[in-house]
Image (cartoon, rainbow, N blue to C red; front, top):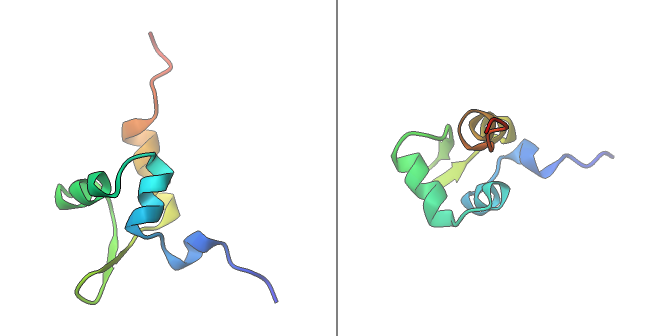
Length: 67
């Protein structure tokens, strides 16, 4: 039996916050603003795909190498 990586099941708000190194409230704000792609299950449950978080990081948050 193989163990699936955690992100295959979808990342929680707390997981996404840890990934970005920010507070959960910041991730929730980004969701409200429409900046992060997510999937909603039921009324409150939200999950993020690891690849979507990586894409957002690369496009918007990665420190610039230019000075």
